[in-house]
Image (cartoon, rainbow, N blue to C red):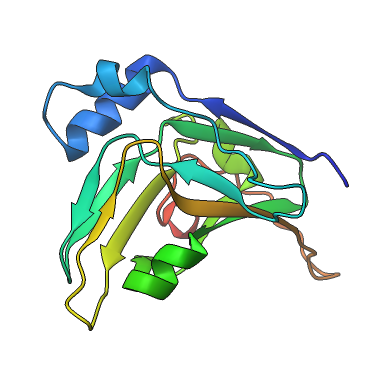
Length: 167
């Protein structure tokens, strides 16, 4: 296996700012101290599980943006794709709001420290409420190598996420 990435926590300052932007509950520092880095569950797992920083309950149709507290250094020519955990998607239709989160290698250097956010929705059409306990895996990241076209000559640099490369 190629070793091409390293998960880290964002700084406390960055996490608290992003946490307060979403939850405004003054618990950012407390939550930060309990963040676990993503890990694979088994030697055959492709995905690195991201863990819920707090208890999350979503009724059908409800959405939440979760500051994970995680950033990831990724070697060039690789990307991290974020998906819901398979069981949550199958049982509850838990969805990533952007279908698949794409974390490019240069996102790490953004002014927000490359803080990975996960916006999820309970898309249940069976009236099922999903409950995720703090510390439980709720989404997974998979590293994928990619290529570019022969005539690609892009030189632009990123600063941000969520549509920053099209500005």
